[in-house]
Image (tube, rainbow, N blue to C red; front, side):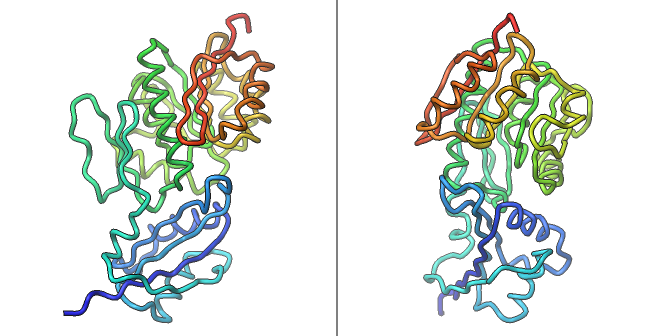
Length: 305
């Protein structure tokens, strides 16, 4: 018996383009579910450059290529075909998206089982939304720091997650502070459906009340919904060093005295300039951890304002 021929079609594009294609696949009526799709960033230091891989148990036909191309609303980028070694193509497609355990949390794809361990909260996030290794390091770091903050007695009643992506961090915050009001935002409108689907799959409610998640499409804090629902006592931002520096004053104005920010997405080499910007905005370091090359910062706002 011959081993199954495995092939891969690859497309490169900006993060919003690839993310939109991944979401389009979930709604595609004629999608062949033998074909597994994943999307991820190319490198830790290039978070906006993404690739899409479509794994086939056969050599892709013209119709196969058209099926993948149809996921791109504004025309497909070039699709590169590659024959893979004779291995299980589903396993290949899941590489880099192994479950992560951080703090009291366990994050896995639908291909893996929940942790099934007392005191550990499992979240299921589809592989098609998986981030590259840098994002995993920052996400895991945030989950660990949130767990630490709760253990240190932080009380959060009004939480915002800026640049939420899959919604994972706001879900984790809601697990730690189940009666909090939470607001998630992202600059990318594709994330609205992603967060809603992930909330449903993980048994969380969307809504405006306590214990529910409200989603907004917003660039930074200058959004009526974010303004109306603030000020916050915990603000989470796992984005990039540049935007973190730019948003320091806005975050300062959006957090109550004595409140907290959790910052991630910055390399350790970028930490000094980020901390300087937040000192100016009235924050002081409460704790930090380093995961790989990435710094995760817990900062507390001065009581005096």
